[in-house]
Amino acid sequence: MNQTNLKTSAQRWRTRLLATVFGLTAATTAASAQDAAPVNNPPMAGPITGNPHPFSVDLPEWFGPAGGSLKIGGVLSGMAFYQDNPGGVFPGDKQSLLDVVDGQIFLNKNEGWFQWFIQAGNYTVHSLGVPYIKTSAYTPGTFGIVPQAYIKIATADNFSIQVGKLPTLIGYETTFSFQNANVERGLLWGQENAVNQGVQVNYSTGPLSLSVSLNDGFYSSRFNVISGLLSWTIDPNNILAVAGGGKLSHTGYSRVFTNLAVNNQSIYNLMYTHIDGNWSIAPYLQYTSVPADPAVGFVAGSETYGAAVLTSYHFDENWAVAARAEYIKSEGNPAGPNLLYGQRSDAFSFTITPSYQWGVFFVRPEFSYVSAGSVTPGSGFGPFGLRTDQTRAVLQTGINF
Image (cartoon, rainbow, N blue to C red; front, side, top):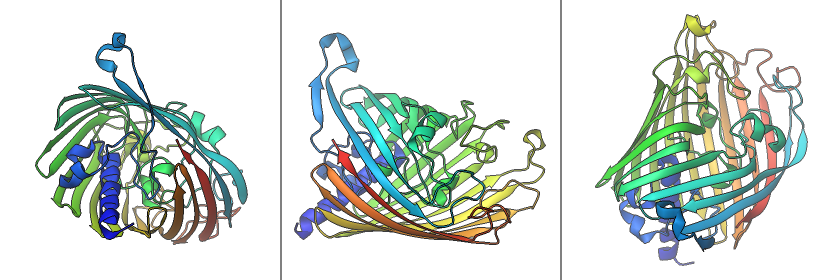
């Protein structure tokens, strides 16, 4: 692949990433989007890419505005997993395992003024620093067999409204493994939500794009969160974005995999994307806050401060490598909720992920390391939660069809 093609590939990578994070179409994310291939849902950040020519059928006329060309795709992937210091606060955590990470199908009608998307199947969302939860438990315990589904009313090229189960506007990494440059999500992602139920409005003008959503935050089914994202395309190789979300009222309950603290937090991101030939680099900052709220049992508040750098390098159209480095710090009164490995703890992580893709087939090994400091006994790694670091090695392989 020559330098021009590599740069075009990188621009497509960035456009897909921004479309994932921002919930926008390719046409509204960057001035160079007209050079990119059409974005199909769910968008993928790369280096792993979706099938550029998914199976397509023409829906019958009686579908009305919901009809037209329906694109059908999916992903099937499995993973081998090994870690040291399993255990901690989650019983049943294993040192090694095999699992089907994704077995999903995508139905995507992304043309015309009435568009819709359905993502269905089994999945798990695995991230650094917390125990792995197998697909058989994660799917029914979180977003169900249809994790994302929405309709989109696009009344103009630069304006649309989405309603349903939507990808979050918060953070740089997105929900599912096949969408991200690394196999596992990072430490900062652990403070972020993944899927919102609600309504979202998207608007763009020139180099600016804005999305605002009223939703249920961490999938609480209580629609009391406002989130938004504003991006500025400085030039074809540089994009700056800010995102944030906060509660309009408190939520006094939690779900199986969502604790009470994050259900009541505010979160803010400052994100930057730079493309330079074969390279991409994306640093971002994050701040979260859970205020004191006696009504939900918080006599004091807690905060986290985080920073991350995600980068990737494309050797050619088949081979690439991605790396991520992060630091996160928890602050607050000892009586406040635990947002990390105990109040006033901190953690560092490093992840490296080579990848190879040939057609629809992909394979990527990954090595990661997490080191935590000022750990509260019982909140760390290992069978008694006393260890302060964890190393993981994973191997993911699959197909995007």
